[in-house]
Length: 332
Image (tube, rainbow, N blue to C red; front, side, top):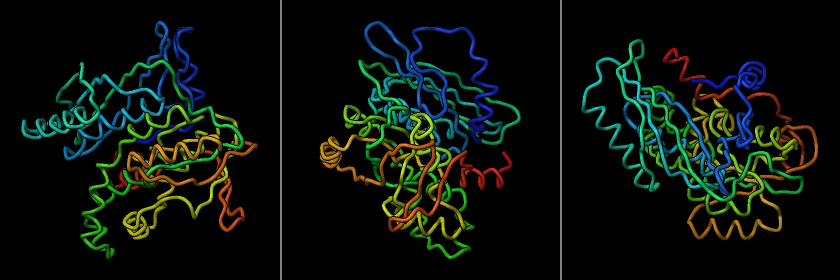
């Protein structure tokens, strides 16, 4: 699945949203991770997302991907609804494997599956899982809150999800191109690191904006913060955290890890006076983080810096490298 461009969203999707409801605080907008609806004295965060894949790991991802989008609102994901569209020929053992992974992910998040739908669907050859996550809180964080002077923080490492997808779905090609199998096997395990729920909830009270970079990777996630907040982000390319396995795999395929699936890396903008506290909180959780740049005034874009020199200016819409390769292989 590939995201529509921001232009198409604005012209076609966002102009057909039904009646206006004053309890909808944040509805469909570019870059915003989840809807926010006023309920009584609190707020409900709601988000839905589909993913397509093989049986292996899809149940785990189906829960964690949407949980991230609730957590970056500073709200704990609590309830989930799951729709499973299954190809003909799938057996009960495969369905059970998906649901065991779903249950394991829910148990780790202390969440509950409260409904959904499951069917055998004609015309598909892989599982499609569409999940809705819901949470309730007293406060919320947006993607649009970044202010000039804030610092840009990234947790863990970028392209963890993308690296795991490449290692799983393109293993033979990677071996053919000289990537050692031990590197590929380690990279497959990165799928276990896609959750940002713990760190997002831990620093929500310190962040001016938080975002979960998915398709288009870190660059698209940063662009969405810049556009939503009407600011420019100045990023030091040498400070972006990338694991050696990611560098090796992406290099072998001539792809850019900055423009590839990055679930697992939380992006947050933090006022300078709060950055030390945020670092202490993350360190106590055992989660590494990097300060990769700052928010500055200017037209929404990404200013990429290396050795104190501007080497690139990024704007527009980033096509995801991993998703592009995946669709060329599987024809979706």
